[in-house]
Length: 100
Image (cartoon, rainbow, N blue to C red; front, top):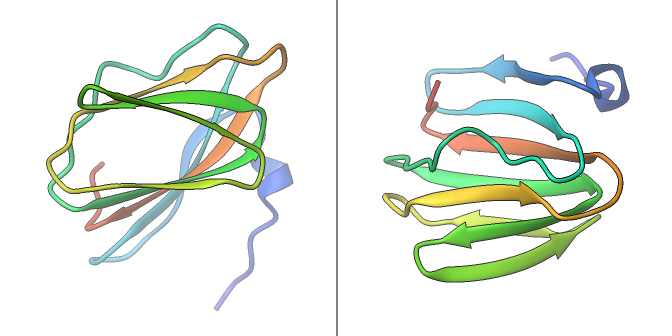
C-alpha cells in the first residue's frame, strides 16, 4: 500500500488511485468556478472539502459545505459543485464504483 500527499496535487483535477471497486481523486476550482456539467453516477459519490467553500446542488436541494466537511451524494442523483469562496476550493472525490 502507498500513501498519498494530497498537497502535491493541489491546482489540478486528477484521479490519483483506482481499483475495480472505487476511484479516488482531487479537484481544485478557482473562485467563482464550477466543475463540468452536472454529474450523475450509478454509485456513491463522496465529497470531502480540504480547503475552501462550496455550494453543492443535489437535485433541487442546495448545500453549503466548507473545510473539513463531507457530503454523501446518493446514486443516480444529479449534482453540481460551485466554488463560492474567495480562494481556491480543493476537495477529494471518491466514487464507488469508479465513474471515470
